Length: 70
Image 1 (cartoon, rainbow, N blue to C red):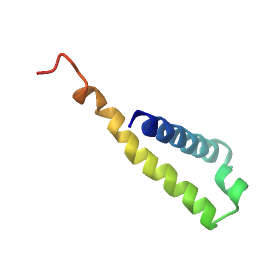
Image 2: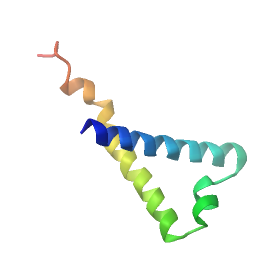
Image 3: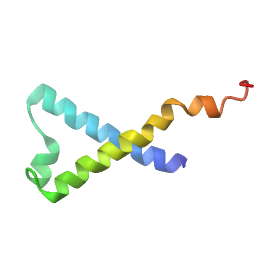
Image 4: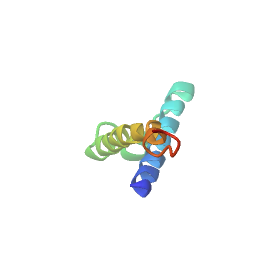
């Protein structure tokens, strides 16, 4: 599962960079690469969203792997 979370983390970082570009420069990298409202851009947005949800598990990873916890 660790490799899946790392791949998802990469997609989440890409999404965060895209939102930063939108916020700072009003430039949407996904739309620039794949055109506006295309199926491919929707797939990219969906993958980033799903990966963000998967990465929520990283927030709670320390609870399940904490050796000192009883």
